[in-house]
Image (cartoon, rainbow, N blue to C red; front, side, top):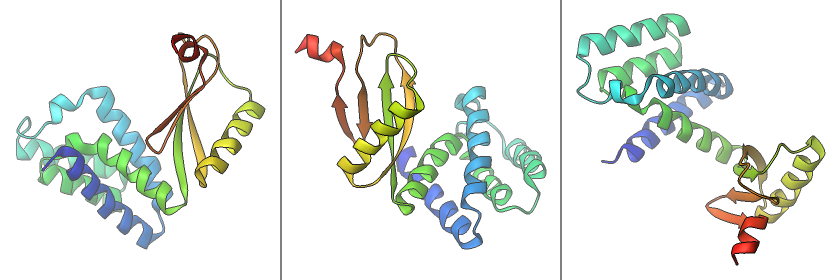
Amino acid sequence: MSTTAIARRYAKALYELAAEDGVVDAIADNLATLAQAVRETGTEALQPGSLGAEVRVGLAEKIGSALGADSLLARFVRVLAQNDRLAELPAVYDWFVRIRDLAAGRVRAFVTVPAALSAADLERLTAVFSSLVGKRIVPELVIDDSLIAGVVVEVEGRVFDGSVRSSLQR
């Protein structure tokens, strides 16, 4: 089974439990922090087989004590550690956010621009793409100074390239 499928299954299970308890946003916030820590540390050190069971469980216990030993996320991290899947935390977070957005009727749009946008420009851009895809857009800005001008928006697997660079290449 691919790691993507594994992460998606864990994320779905965590989301369902969090939704039952009414703590989806709190779990997302704490999971984001854990995923960032794993990304910064590097997932190589946490790959299956890299750490012994005792080390994994000890690590999960320390994380759990910081989260509240009996919290849903602490229990979830313990399960990941027991199953030697701690390296999946960043992917689990990514899938968790996707599932949460889908349940809320919104989608992420990756907006690449040459410089920071004003709040008004971002709001207009979000409104245009929200009406285009029929869902509420949550923009994630990426500044790419190699763009001359314009914008590139990726939403739901579709790319809308309104950059000057692409226009010149065409």
